[in-house]
Image 1 (cartoon, rainbow, N blue to C red):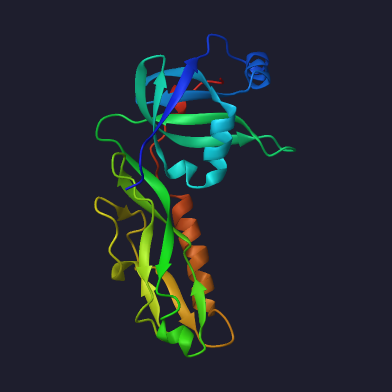
Image 2: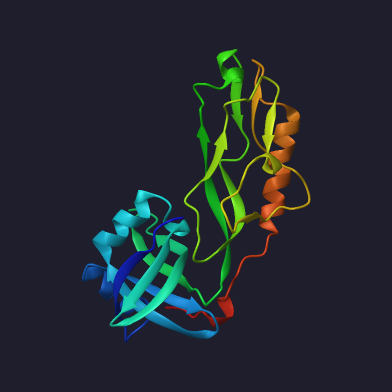
Length: 220
C-alpha cells in the first residue's frame, strides 16, 4: 500500500486570480479541498515541497493528510494545473475522502523477471498493452503498483487480467472482458488484435465512473 504523506497547509481567506498570484509570489501553491458533501476549503502549500512531490511520480495515486492549522483531512489529488510555459505547479485540486470511501485510480504495472522470460530469451519482443490498470480501491489501501510476473511467458502467449492477483481490496473497473496486459510477440511486432484491444480498453475507461464532487467545488 502507498504510504500516506502529511502536508502542512495554511487557510486562504481570499480567493480569485489576484489572491492566487499573490500566493505564488510568496512561494506557495494555491489549492482547494472539496468533496464529501462539504464546503470547499481554499488553502496554500509550500511550493518547493509540492514541486518535488508532483514530479517525483505517483502524485495522483498518493494518499495525503492535509493539516490545515490543526484540522486534518484525508485527501487525494484530482488535478494539478501547470504553467503552460514553465511547467511548474500553479494550482492543485484535492478530493476529500470520507469514511469508507473508494476510488477509481490508474495503478502502474511493474513487470518481474523480464530477463528470465523464456519468450524474450527465445528472441520474442515484449508487447506491453497496459502500462497501468484502472482499478477500484479503498481510500485507506491504495496500492503503489500491480505486479505481473513474466517468468513463464512464451512467444505468442499473453497475460490477461484474470491471470494476475490484484492487491487486496482492489478490482478492475473493466469487468466485461478478460483484457490483455502484456504479450510476447514473434519478431515482427504487435498483432492487430493487441492494437484493437488497446483502443477498446481506452474507450471503456473513458466511460468508467469515478467519485466526483464537482458540484461541491468552486473556483478557488
